Length: 378
Image (cartoon, rainbow, N blue to C red; front, side):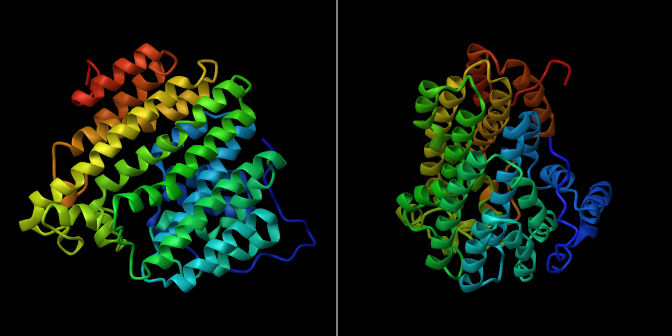
């Protein structure tokens, strides 16, 4: 990997941005991030912030080699910056829209990236996500060391994502309120289906084993790969999204068909009706997960690191969706659905061992669909 990115000696320092609430971060991460920022060590900053904003993808991203690993790492972090802006509570669309536009300008060079953190002074959110936004200049500094064709791929799909986010921010200025199933699918395309295309284009660009034939077949299913994971995330966090982020993704159409509404989404006396409404989304998630499984099995066995990257979030999504079919906790204030740490560890170990065998992957997926997966000694 290249040496840490630093501005030329004659370059003026980037505009000051308000510090992120670093005290809320783990002490070890806080120290490492602080040292990386002080030294303008872009690589160290990106690698340290990654597990703080995504435990699910951090392991898989670390397995990807060279330029591919750096591309996915920085692309993921840039997408998280866009997501943090989109979700920032209390910000008007007139403030969010320009920030999403300016984020795309950062792809054009370090000057725009250096100016971005100060523009985001009003953005609020979780401490790790704010730390990421406040140091977006370092993320883009690392990104800009990538080859030009790779940068073009990332820019294309992040621009598509940010444009879709901006559309929904202005469509629902008082908080997202998805109205129909079709609109739900459109939203999931922008925030997650685009990621499926981005990753698949990067596989083709950097993995010799993903030739034209494999690439074309993967592209037929890559949208479902991203959208399946997004739908599961939405379903498990229904209450959190409604209360904390003022966003409701369960379509009003479905809720009304079952005798409820978005206004009563977390009402105890409407739990049965609300549960009936999300069954449609659960079925959509199962169908997309099956397409995502086929996507994984199409990846050549020689692309070991790419298979490892894909298998863990897929297994976690199957396990989470299985649990979602057995509970209504996500429809209660403060409720959410998370698989056990024991199962997370078991799937991490077993998924890595089974990733190269299509037969083993099929067996493991079917096993996870039925009940919690444990290793013999757990």
